Length: 242
Image (cartoon, rainbow, N blue to C red):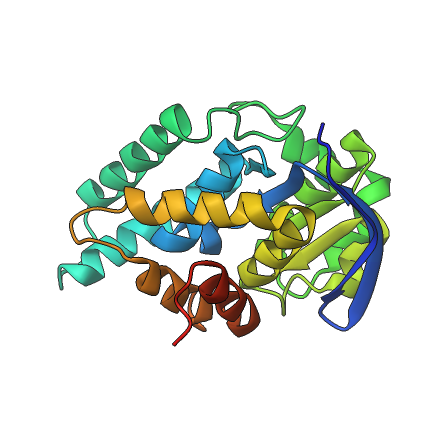
């Protein structure tokens, strides 16, 4: 699976510290609120292509993505949400799945199956039905199912740490993390690999041009990665320290 390992790597999941053995590729389930952010999602897509992470999401997460992305498109164009926005969002996702993350479904999931219903009725995952927001249960169940199937840790990349608390997910070896903390884990495992992948992502953005300074700004941004320490480290590595 990978050559780099971190024994006893620890990170903060809400108010809980998790300690596990990690190896590349890092298993990452992406929440919809991460996939809708262009820079954040394309950074993750390129990390997946570089085999630094194993990135997955479910059909239910896709539905949420399409709704969020369609609404953002309508808001950008200062008009009401239209059916064409949903079609556009779905086609955009299909292109991502075809060219960037062709194996996006977690193991055992099918685009048209009823796996989520099975998980909801499983006594093993019953505690997850009591999460603060019932709308987030499907995300937690998918991550827990993947962890159980793989026999290893799964990182849940999300902006919604409040409703997906680490203390509730830790017993299932699921670790909800902000995307900036996901980058920190990748850096622990392969700092050079992370740097190269970020350089590729930066170069691939066109119209408008995206520079390394823009990437560092995204890594610092509270709306994106919110990781000042990593941005400073990368600035030094890239020779951009003032």
